[in-house]
Length: 164
Image (cartoon, rainbow, N blue to C red; front, side, top):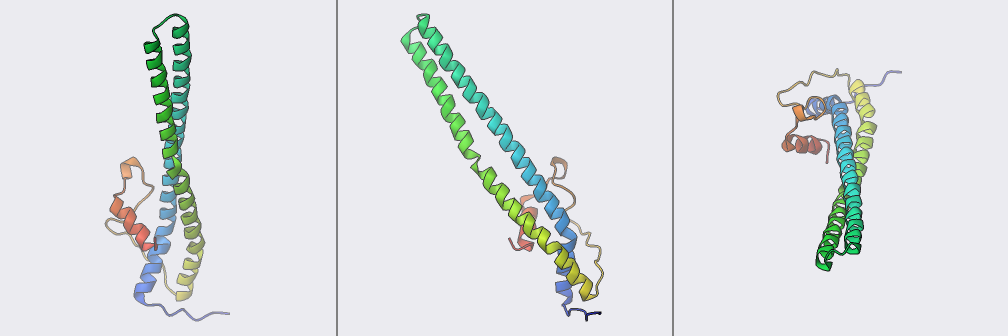
């Protein structure tokens, strides 16, 4: 049983075709961003652990130096430096809370984008149109990598076109 084509304006069809064309690339880019933020967060976590271990070693050394008769002032200074390292490590660790939040947001956006891709393709099929080539100057191409870095305006435009 054939259904009648859905009456859509040319502008609406073009927008749907463009969205269907760009959705896989947008999802790929978001996955890449999520992966890179996770890698960066993991590096920070490893550095925090190293700083904390170093601060612990400084404390042990300060005790050994105190036992060896080093001046109380020098031992106190070494302990203060160890405590400062711990404070910086804690500050670094706390600054990574953005990564968890951004990962959750990216997952929700990816779920949304994935859920609308097939229905949009279905709309195009029932509208009786063929997807057109949307290659344009300035169109996003491929995953954002250092050699294909996007400008923030491009990212903002893409998210705005998707309603975010």
